[in-house]
Image (cartoon, rainbow, N blue to C red; front, top):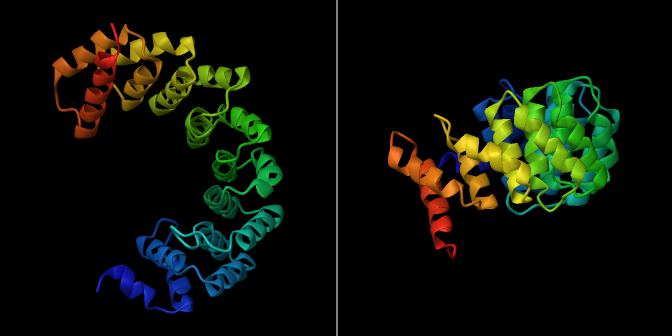
Length: 273
């Protein structure tokens, strides 16, 4: 019998007790939470909502963790879960719980949480702001875009990264001068992954300000997949010889990088001369 089947055989109460053990990333705890997600019954919903009212911040956070993906691949009881998580945002003060609530709402894509998430974006705790950016990045609303633009310049690296990814990729259908300018501002970020997310976001919108940074990124000693994706999106002919030079250089690049490189080169070579 596989481990998931063994955990599914436990009672809801037993699974919740396991979920409350260990630290935030405890594997056994998350296995129990995933088992509760897969069960996806109203009884699990009610047990998770009961946790949201616990005196323990850890229990409240775990309640949000359970609600976020209840039903696993077959989401269930969406309205009730949304109600409970929005109400949690309104009353909660603990940053770690606000983080769990924001991440849970990102799975629900809950527009009713928009006002609360925008307010949370100004929280003094980076944990709470990360929860805000998670929930906002999946909402198709001007207010969400404006909040993500502010968060893309956040002092916390993880918040900036998630906000830049949200603007650049998750909100790909949105395109405003302010959004593009926010991505351009991240091209000077000290973190290469954030720069990469910004490059991809600008390239998918066809912004010419990404051409020179992409060219420079393709010439670096270490080239990231972001640069390849941005080159493919922009399609500038000057990228082709640089991509071929990367292929010729060989080296110990990981298999995924090589496969993306070959795919991007093939796109350039299939274009009419």
